[in-house]
Image (tube, rainbow, N blue to C red; front, side, top):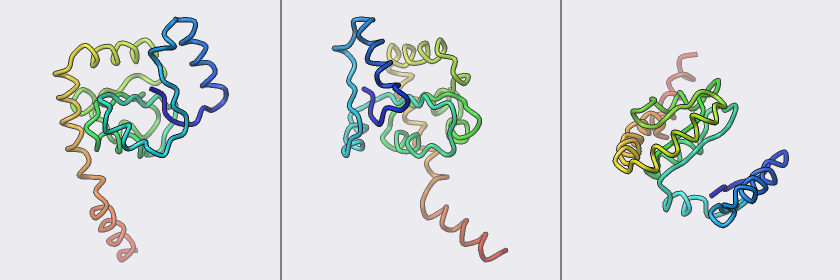
Length: 143
């Protein structure tokens, strides 16, 4: 399932690819949705395929929903959240072969998928709203 806005004709490319591979009935292009949290709650695997990121909140949200997360190790962002093979999987940036292998690996190995998803919750502590507010308050008071 692909959820979100399609940029630069990416959605058309993926739809054509799915059609050419004769898997269009197995792929859902949901577009922009208001019920993303509900969709995530029913999902087990999350793939972040961005080439560049800041701090990808969607990755943190996916981890909070107990999803096994796979992301490209782009310049910043995912590697600040994912510890490779501990709480998710990091793939060399834009290595589509390794990305496909990682997706297949977690699909075929439910134990690994659950292990990575369960460990994902541990990283969420450092993104706790109260902790972040306390750090900002400390920083502002000590400038």
